[in-house]
Image 1 (cartoon, rainbow, N blue to C red):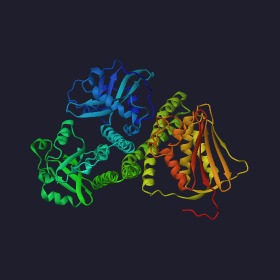
Image 2: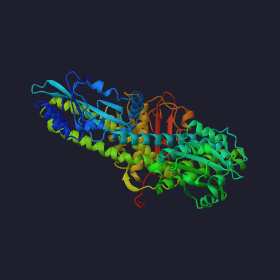
Image 3: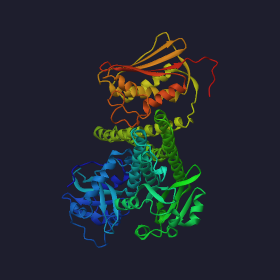
Length: 608
C-alpha cells in the first residue's frame, strides 16, 4: 500500500487517470494504452489491475504475462538493484540532477529506482504515485507512473565527474608541496616527481571530458624507449603492467617509422590494427579501437605524447576533442619547462616562477571545463523558470477555488525555489572560474560607464535584503551627498558588493545587523561593509585576498561555499582594475569590516 495519499491537480496525465474511476477495466486499459508514460494501476490492497502498453514495453513483459492480482511490490522485486540504488541517490547532491525529471509534473517523484531488465539492460526511472478517487472522494485505486531518465542520469553523472576532475586538478596544482625533489631523471624530464604530482589529474580531466575509454601520458626517453607517466581508465592490473614495462619498448617497435614521421605533424589518429603490441597488451585492444596521439615537443625534440583511446561507434574524434587534447599537451610542456627552470635556477627563485607557470597551466583548463559545465545550466535555468511560471499561473487560477490546494501548490514551489538557488550557486562558481581564466591571460575587459555609486549600492542592498528577509542590512549614507559619481563597470562593482555582503551575512549572528557605509574624501569614495561576527585573525588577514585561498574559519567563507577560494581574490582584482584598493579591519571577537575605494569620476572622463 502506498506510503502517502495525494489528490490530483495540474497535470493532464494526472487528470486523465483521476477520472477513470467510472471505467471498466477494459475501458481503462484502452485509455492507458494510448498514454506515452508507463502506468501500473493497483487496487486498495496493492494488487495490480492494469499495466499499460508503455509499461509492458518498459519492463519487457511478454504479451501474455499474468500480472493481474500480483502484488505491486512482488512485481518490482526481480527488477530492483539495491546495490545501484545508493549510487543513484548520490547524484541528488549534485545541482545538475534538476535536469533529470524532464517535464515537471505537479509534485516531486515518490521514488527513484535502478532497474535491471530481463534483456540485461540497466535503466533508471522516476516513480510517481497517485490515488484514484471515486465519486465520493474516497481512494479506491492507485496509479504508479514511471519515467525513464537513464540518458539524463548518465549525462548528469558525466558532468559531475568532469567537475570533480577539474577541481582535483586545480587543488593539486595549487597545493603542490614545496619539499619535492627537483632532480631531473636521466631518462626524461616527463618523469620528474614535480610533474607526476599533476600528470594524473591532467589525464583524469581528459578522460572525463572526452568520456573516452582510456587516456594516458607517455614519455619518450633519450634512447627512443617509451615510459609510462600516468593513465586513466586502466584497471589496476593494466596500470601495474605498464609501469613494470616502462622503458622496455621503443616507440618505433610499436608504431613503425611511418607513424613516427607523422607525429612530427603534431597529431595522428592510428587504427588499432596498425599498432604492433606485445601479446599481453594486444588482448586488451579490440580491432574497433583507434588511438589519438598528440605529441609533446621539448626544445624542438619529440619528448612524449598524450594517447587517447576510443572504441566502437565512438571511435571517431571531433575537431573540438582534438583541440582539447592539444591544449592539454601544451600545458604539459609548460610544466616540463617549469621543472627545467627550477633545476637551473637558485632556490630563492624557484617558488615564485613555479607558481606563475602553474597558474598559466590552469587557465586553458578552467576555460574549457567551465564551458562544459555552463552549457547544461542554461537548460536547467530555463526549465526551472518555466516550471515556476506555470505553478504561479496555476496558483492564481485555483486560489479562489480552494485555499488548501493553494497551500499545496505553494509547498511544491518551495523545492523549485531551492533548486533554482542551487543552480545559481553553480552558475556563480563557473562565472568565477571564467573570470579568473581571463585575469590570468590578461583578457578581462570592463564595460566602463558613468554611474552613481549610491544607486548601485542601494540596488545590491535591496536584492540581498529580499533574499534574506529576516536579516537587517543598514545602509549609512551621508545626508548631504545626493550622488557619488564614478566611472565603473557596474556589474563588477555589484559583484564585489554582493561578495562582501554574502560573507558578512554568513559571518554575523542572525540577530545582528550588517552595516554598509559610504564616505567621500577629496577625490576618493570609500565603501565599508561591517559585520559583528567572530572576526578574522591577523594570520588569515594576510592571505584572504590570495587566489584559491580558503579560510579556516567561517568569518570569510562558509563551508558550503563553492567559490574555490576565488571570491575575495576576484574582488581585489576588479577593484584594482578600477584604480581602487581593498582591505579588511578585524580582530578576533570584534567583527570585521571589509572596504574598498574608488576614484570619484570627473565629467570629462570617457566611457568604453
